[in-house]
Image (tube, rainbow, N blue to C red; front, side, top):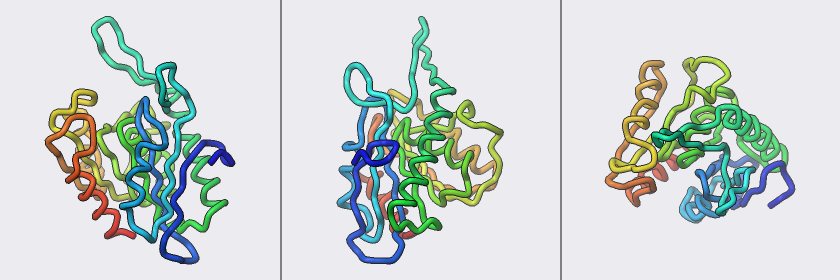
Length: 214
């Protein structure tokens, strides 16, 4: 679909209702909206499922929410200006989805992988009044993407990571739940024997977590 500010795919609810919970799927660096949309057939039938595509095409294929650069020592840096801009783009897109479709604005899930998870964290602390749930898969919390320091919110989080992730070290991932716990924010953290990807057990765990909140 290309009628809104960002391109997207949609699976409408299979169970009729006046307003549906929204599950927004946000892919990672170098991927596209088709990637996480493969989860859609298995997600709760009551939900409106939307998979959104990052705005920046990459020269080798796929898309990105923000640039990643490396220095001579192979240290990795994320562009904070582009990251903050993408948080704002997701806000605009969410508002457009809510205006176009019958969304239950009291039951919105941001479900992100890698860059998508990092942005979901950032969005939840920038616009905590707009969403109620975050599923952060194989990502980490990036303070540089925030406009102001993180404070307590009423969002609940499912955070997961692969024990042998070669892209985002598991030590980085653990800092997210540590921050949430320090702020007294509800969360669950799980690890799986996988690299930078979603283990089958990871999928079923977060699927069930979402189902309990639909």
